[in-house]
Amino acid sequence: MSEVETEFLFETDIELEPPQMIGQTPQGNRMIFYVKGGSFQGPKLKGEVLPGGGDWFLMRPDGVGELDVRGTFRTDDGALVYVTYRGILHAPPQVMARAQAGEKVDPGEYYFRTAPLFQTASEKYDWLNRIQGVGVGWFGRNRVGYRVYAIR
Image (cartoon, rainbow, N blue to C red; front, top):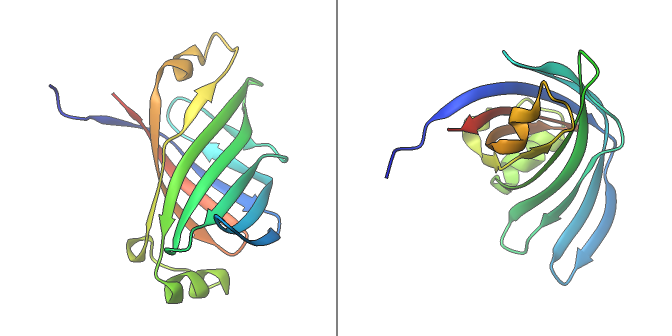
């Protein structure tokens, strides 16, 4: 078996609407964050994160957040890319509170990882349909971002 290798794809910066607070459910505290917009940029693709996507986020009773994200990217040359991913966010309560209060928190203080998959009809970006991504995230008040890599 070979070792895992990665290739940097892009970095994102995404602005979010204030969350819809569904509240405490049997599975945990459900919040829905809709995307206002954003950008992504990397060596092989760049463009904008379109409004309308979102994260159907669940804060589990054990303090671990589960991400369930769907969104659309538009490349600078007009191709649309559907992005979906699950992920995990775990931050100590005091770190979460600082970030949500607007303080810039060092991503080394928490764990935030995602596993993006891509779908596109674009011939130029067809290679995205055949890769598994991994994202290392950061978050703040109504903002989120990732460095995304392809697993080779």
